[in-house]
Image 1 (cartoon, helix red, strand yellow):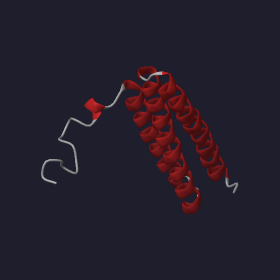
Image 2: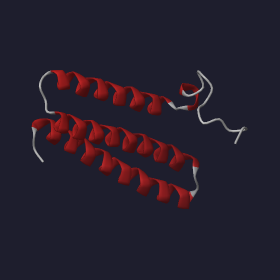
Image 3: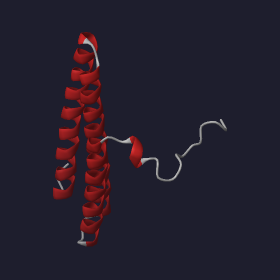
Length: 109
């Protein structure tokens, strides 16, 4: 366990991410910041918590989608097919989570 630290060394986390993953991470933090500001505007804590959770899920799925697309480019024919299916799955889950986050902020359940 001593060979693999629980946390990467300072400054190495961003270096291991692709441009699209960095963009998605920035988007995620932007959404989280926006949701925090909405909390001060009077949104209920339950709605805000659900919206933040769904926004987080959407960002994670978008990162997984981009990773699968990248893997598909590097793969053979079977790998391309598998990774394209993964990409489409994560694309749909990301859209669904984003829609749920919007609905939570509007007060719809």
